Amino acid sequence: MTHMSDLTWTCHVCGDERPDDKISVHSVTKTTRMIEIKQNVRYCNDRVDCIEGAKKIDWLDGPAHYEMTKVDGT
Image (cartoon, rainbow, N blue to C red; front, top):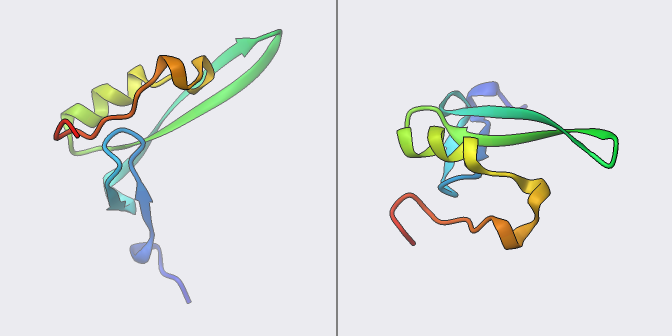
């Protein structure tokens, strides 16, 4: 049986796998071609770079507009 304490998630900003209580989700609803789409970005809630980085990610702009880099610069 899986317990909530065993859950881990990957941060969309830094790429690290973190425990459930260290990950939050930044949600934005956008409209494209008259269709509402909800975008969810997981981020480390205890790292300032991830908190700020989550606000800048826009999956709907496509990969040409977003380059994922780890917090350490790699």
